[in-house]
Length: 160
Ligand SMILES: [Fe+2]
Image 1 (tube, rainbow, N blue to C red):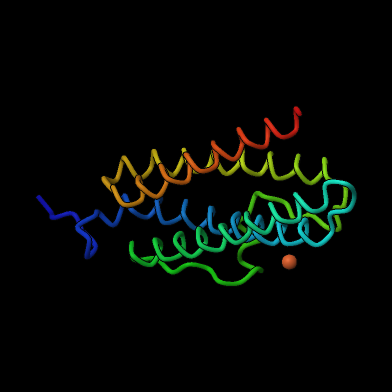
Image 2 (cartoon, rainbow, N blue to C red):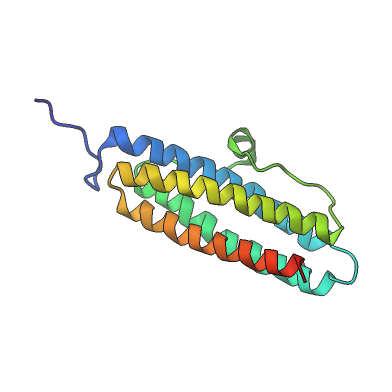
């Protein structure tokens, strides 16, 4: 019987690779989402300007923390996180937006992005469970709860 190769955390390198890849895709999507949120914050116009300008700032500041946590998780697991947009855009499934000033178009875009990220976090969670990576399971759980709450709040906001 040959010993299965493990990283410094005691996790099997073969099963942790898909977790690292999934975190890398998430990181790429988060970076595009972050940049989209900055654009929405700058370009929003109309009677919802003040509330949405502030909400987007809150969101992108939170995303900056989440981005850092995600990238550091990749490093902790033995991977190397991408740190440039040319790499992010190859991996990202979140599309870039440009010059959106209509509040509803902006909120719909954020809503759809949160749904996409939620699906990706659930896939990450499954991979992390399979590899016994409890730290990433915890990160995924936290993200799932966070985005589910945001989806609820945006639903309530748009139906007012
Ligand atoms: Fe600002």
